Image (cartoon, rainbow, N blue to C red; front, side, top):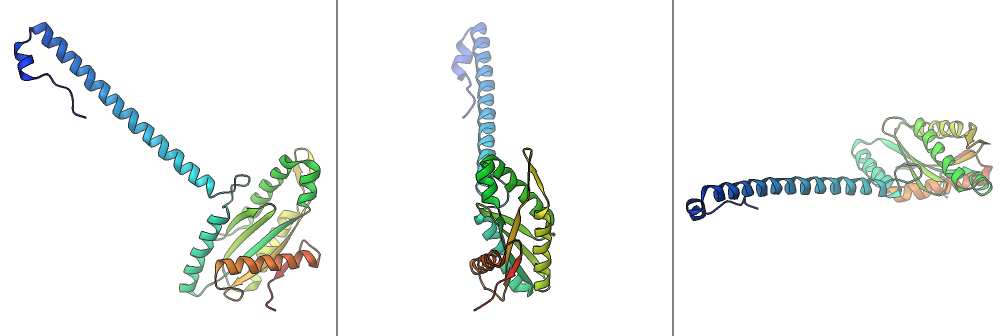
Length: 222
């Protein structure tokens, strides 16, 4: 919007006091216009920041702040593309907490959420540079381990996580202990796509639970 200015005829014909008043009004309007423009720019900036924050929250689990399923899928797909070009191997670990539902039902959802947050922190503390974790929902997590030299690297990570999760928790004054069953899917041995790897890791995790819980099982092709 252009600044308001008096016409040449008004400036010429008007008495000096009127010209001075008109010029003062023009200055006031110009200053007001500048303030409106600044406020508008600030509001646009605030809305953009809010939108970015909302988008970030939608890609992260609201309880643990770990990546959600969608963001974890993207990270896994990017890792597969990279490793296909380099020939490196990777592993997907599917984790399911043992005894979580018992604690959640007996102590309440607030304590259950506290437990999920602390488990997420312990998992995150086990990761190396390049690894990532996500929460699928409920008491299930996934971990991407890459690169790995062989299956032993994936097993070591799984056992490190089990050891960390087995340490006692103190939740709102309640001492708690849980276990975690972990299934391992290897690329490229157990699937070409991210969906295949996650599904096979999940199948292996179910096998670990049937085996006795709080243990590790590698996916086996039938």
